[in-house]
Image 1 (cartoon, rainbow over the protein chains, first blue to last red):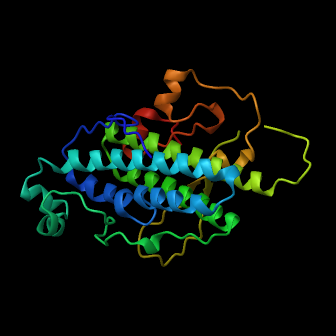
Image 2: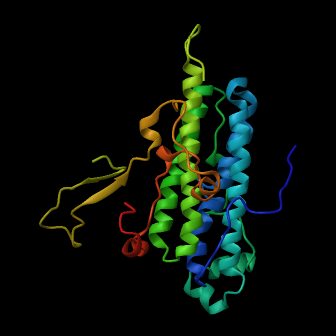
Image 3: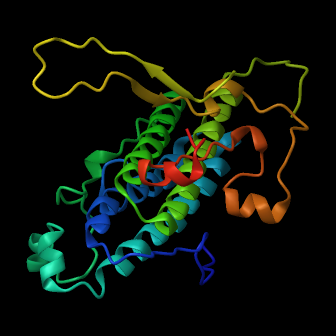
Length: 189
Length: 76
């Protein structure tokens, strides 16, 4: 069960009307390494991971939903008042024909989201290594979006999200260490 | 001095069609170096941590884009 708090994890500010940025950001919405893929991956893998790290997957999977909401807010703000001319210029004309200004789970190239982006192999180490890789890929994606964006307020939010990817990767690495831990170890954390 | 921004100089051919990018960069985020987080590491004040995205100073590694570099300078 979840409890919904009706506010964003980090304030989303967008200072320029630049629908092109929405086209890039949608990669983190419905792309292979996006927040939706991350949330679904962790919240599904958690059932078959050892109890010791199950809570970590629940927590991070939940936070990914909060990130998804931030990305959605960014995309919405960037497109809600865009004229058809602006949408055309931004290369969002095809999106408009199919969805008007509604958001949709697809990547920056318009490829719709698919469950084949994620895996649950059932082997704890295998799944955690996938999760570490997913976090690092998302971190890199945020870097490339920041590189393409000249909106300092938007980048501020993206920087926060990128920092969270670093922390998540760190925690997944620690989860691997927990599962590797030798029996009768004297050190406790 | 330690940095999480690494550089290398790729091979440049005299016959490359585009003007070469002589130095390429990549990021090695701090989580690559820590292993299991040791106890009692320095923290940010709470209100600051909420803004930065982490409580722990060693994991804070902000990334700035080329449009911001003019103002932020040492972002990477």
